[in-house]
Length: 488
Image (cartoon, rainbow, N blue to C red; front, side, top):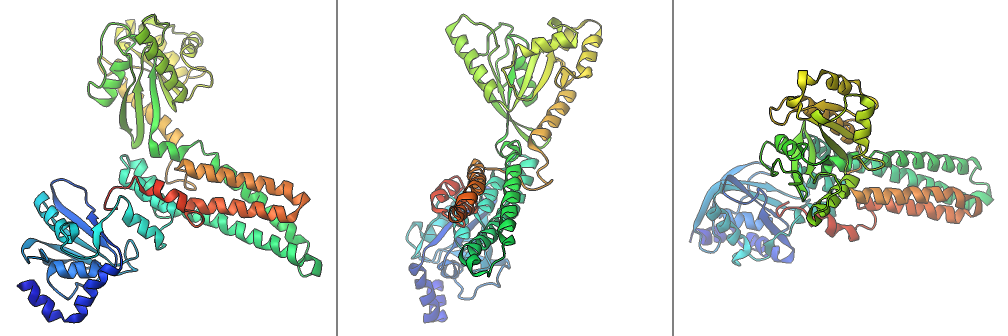
């Protein structure tokens, strides 16, 4: 009855607004995650958001834009109270998606949330509303120009960020630094292309000077060098985004599984004095000084005779070839103390062109006299990689190992706040590589046919546009947004 009185008092204009929701597509979802929590946020976006908010609160007047207001939330069909919470009204285009949006900040009990979701359309209570698909809010923001694809990818990375360095990199990309860099390159290409086409069309009329062509050549060459330098970043952004893949490798029974358990502070791998216990790859994700590390324990490297162990050794060697970092573990009580001999023992473990390595000499507690000679060899450096003595039994040397790990991760991932933003997606690398290839072919085509040279510049610009979504975005939209959570 209360809802009917409110509708009647509002008059036909509000009813018309509510019915107009059916003309457009309005989506809704829980945006604060699922499960029991103190506060749950339900978001709507689309032309029906105004009517949905008015109907759920039973009031024709809306709160001031972007101001929290306390309201009683009701079922629009039965007028039964569902909760008492805060509501926010975001009229478009000043909203995340650029459309009319509303948010309901409710108590986070499952019954409250499910009741409001049913009221929003799961039970057919309101016309024109439907549950959102994963990433659909962000996709609408992209469609309305609120952010480009690189910023959308940065937002997805920010949601999934688990370490401080990942958060910093994702936030920087979400705020548009990477997109602005690519947009600047695209504008430079556009200007060069315009000058080249003007020279082609008007040079015979003496309306365009000869030096215009040399200016275009210089611009294209400089841009090719800048993009090429951006590509040669050692995959820092990708490593930071996905985690540095590190492999613990070494002969059997040197403490590889014990090292994994020590680093992750739990019994993730089986430890046994029997050589060859580890047959498969055991993988854990760690946060080392804010950097993400995906650490794998592998089978001991030796000429195995058991078929199962042979498969384990084969998988270990495959992981070594794919690794970004190796923790090479040797028995401190069984290795020579001379750096050259120790380096030879290490070299027998690693594949050709091995990735960066940290040498871990385990079982330091078994050394006579504290292992001073071996400790000096570790501190000497070349020809050894960064090295440390460690006792997985007592924990001695763990702090030094963590410091070496943090230093190596910082070198691999770089400072996410320093310099120009890093590449974070393989698709960026692919399109930038194609862009550089097109710019390189410009120089060859330029000597033969200026029309073909102009086409190379158009192709290079299209590849840049595909990264930001300004050109040919349709084929990548589903891939980018499908991994977003529902409600974002």
